[in-house]
Length: 165
Image (cartoon, rainbow, N blue to C red):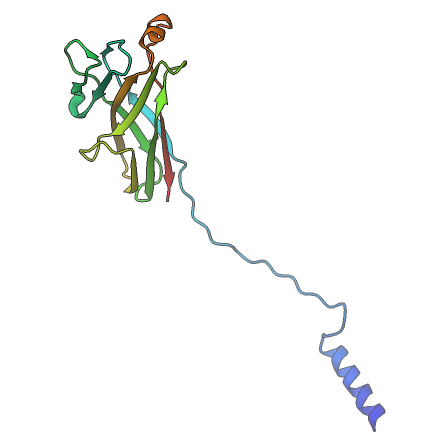
């Protein structure tokens, strides 16, 4: 009786497809969403105006291009930078500014986002609009005025990082 039971069980196992060597393959899908890469375009270059080459003097360009500080030479306003940000509208981004300098660090520069009415260096959770532009000003500090004159410094660099949350 035990031999008959084992023969019946073995036959049943082979017929049910559960024998060694049987395999199954299938195709599945992974869901995803696509977003546009973020891009930055400078539509208006910032102009800090004429800067007095005295060490430690500063000149700040703020809302509407208003200039203030002991390093601001002459009258007249500066020009705020306008940076267009494009990407997937409706998504949230973080914006961070990084201080910059002239090539030989004769001048340092602390940029500032003026969109929100204050001088922020970071913004988090900004909802990207179909047409999104940042207004930037900032403060230039003369680190070495004599070297800036010798090297005929005419610009300072700064960096803007925009990342999706």
